[in-house]
Length: 105
Image (cartoon, rainbow, N blue to C red):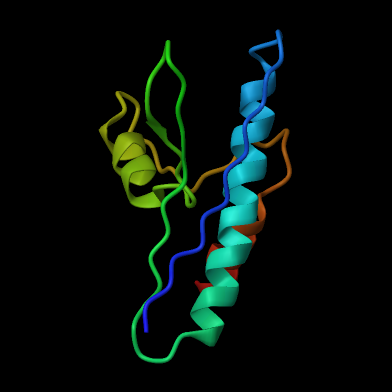
C-alpha cells in the first residue's frame, strides 16, 4: 500500500535573505525524513521532492545533496587545472579529505 506524506510550510517576511536559511532547513529536514523512510522501507525505495515556490520567482527545486562529481569536473576544467589539485598551500592546514587521501597513499 502506497501512502504519501506532505509537509507544507509557508513563510512571509520582508527580508529575502532569510530564504537561504529556510532552504537549508528544508533540505536538512528532508534528508532526515528520507533517511527514516529508507530505514523503514520494505523493498520499494522511497521518493522525495523538496522545492520552494512563489508567485514572483516561481518553482525552485531544493537539492538534498551536493553534486560532488560536477564540482570535481568544474575543478578539472578550470584554467589552472594543470597544477596538482591535491596540493595544499603551505600557510593552511590540510583538509580532512586531504588527510584521508594522504593516508591512503
